[in-house]
Length: 226
Length: 173
Figure 1 (spheres, rainbow over the protein chains, first blue to last red):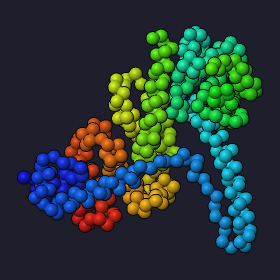
Figure 2 (figure 1 turned 135 degrees about the vertical axis):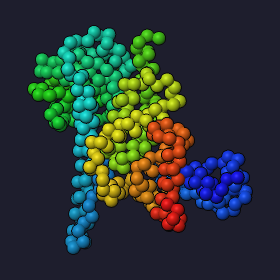
Figure 3 (figure 1 turned 90 degrees about the vertical axis):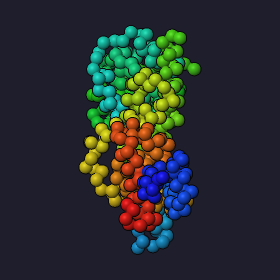
Figure 4 (figure 1 turned 120 degrees about the horizontal axis):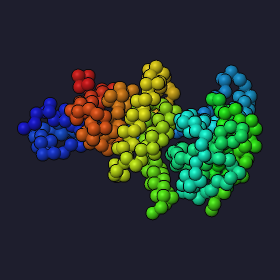
């Protein structure tokens, strides 16, 4: 026969335990049965508490309240202006910063990708692009690295193209929509994300002169398929 | 099936897994690290690692436990780098107040904050048991500890919560 101490230790770890020994003790001890019921109810609360949805870190931005000493009309006007400013920052700057940071972090994560300069056979490049229904024409340059990588929870083609200006990393982000080009310079990299017929395409390099022109040539060499 | 078809299928299967499991992985990583930025980074790194070793996953029905284990390892790596930054729990509570808030039910908000304040050794098995639905033996396997240790930690976690929320006498914890 299970003692009260054994019962409480067990259900303290597993409130929904319901084997023969537990059930037998419940029938014999009203106090322990009530204790288990309380723990089961608490577990319902624990479950609800754990079911959080962490928002993206950028979405926490909110306008600061106006200072109390200001005249009311001025405070309202100031808060409206602040609200519009914050909204603009959130709408424009945050997506820009987010995608730039993600792209650069991804490039930093694969430092070996830009190491080799030897060209891959076209079949190796096609194997990476085929699932996306895309092709890369000769105008882009020789491809020295081609892998399917995970970016933002999606599998995306990751290429390194050898250009006269230096190697550039190309990420095809079919799942990300942007309305206009996003240029960035972060952690020693310069890059641009261009809107594409399907999502976006990011071109990133180090010390690449006229990256915009390079990116446009790569972009023009992509056959997007249907 | 040619190589292209195989790759397409592999990508589709992995993409489906990521899409369905990412919210749980993010929740788990957040409860481990108690930091949104860290959780996102850990999950992103974990998915990269998972993709690279996707072929090692023999049974996709076990994908969730496999991915959670990868998240645990990735978190341990990240935490080593950020150990000093994560020592002030009051600052963490303030920083994560948007996630901790539960305007629909004060009790949920209070419980959330108390779980947030639990030591990691108690918080993690509680999340794996209550939120992820794993048995104590499965949790022991994932955490690399004995089942008895998991039972002890779960008991203490609940006792601590009951004490903090005024539901239990002092001696119980």
